[in-house]
Length: 357
Image (cartoon, rainbow, N blue to C red):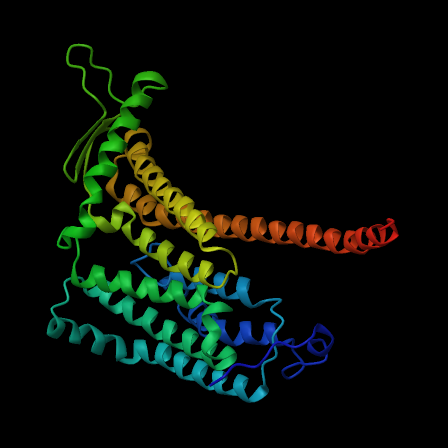
């Protein structure tokens, strides 16, 4: 199905869907299932990536950021088709507490699922990603990925990560686990540096001095102001899922930008370094929380469950905004230079004609 073509802003101002601006109408219908689940099941919106639907909120932010203000016509017929898909999606969420969730849970052993909770949440993200992606195709045609891909890509990436966690939890997926010891060695060095040169975060025992952080493989042993605390770190907690989601969202974002490939590679490399840095900062913050604040497992888990998202997603949003601002500023500058060149050309031609032959 081909998408509706862009039209001049003068025509867009006169085009509405049931009296609503097309971009606003498209945004509302795409986030309607998310709004429904938020109202119907607010307790399921934990910010932890594998403990609920908190990711829906970030997908909603991506959808709104890309669609609101978009100058595109959308026919009422297409809108009504998407409204039907939204109703089917909402019906899925309505059916979950009526026995559908139990059926999904009962099916887990047949597929050798290791973590049933991740398996259950995975289907929520699969359904939402199918709805958002198919709706964007209906609205914009096969070029949808150049118009508003971030929300759909984020949902698809989240579903993929949950599937990995469901089938390959802990350290069962070796290729994703190899980065963990490197992160923990960095964590050990930074934490011990803080203890040696900035502030005391370990027990004072002159007769038997020891570092507050010791990393061995994927095991991190902490000994802070509140006593010892040991962590066994697996790939999901090391931020591998954030790196995968960053890669998918950033690729989708760069794909729709009309800039040289060299600049795209530079932006991607900078973002990759930034995402790795955020993951390292997250692990260090978790260590410092146990060393300085508390070793209570329940309190530490509460911080651990949200630390990744409250660091990674704001970073991703800010970085994308910076890239967009930088490119818009560059394009305006190039346009201004081009306009000056065009204005100067007639003057040069006239001067050339006035010179004697």
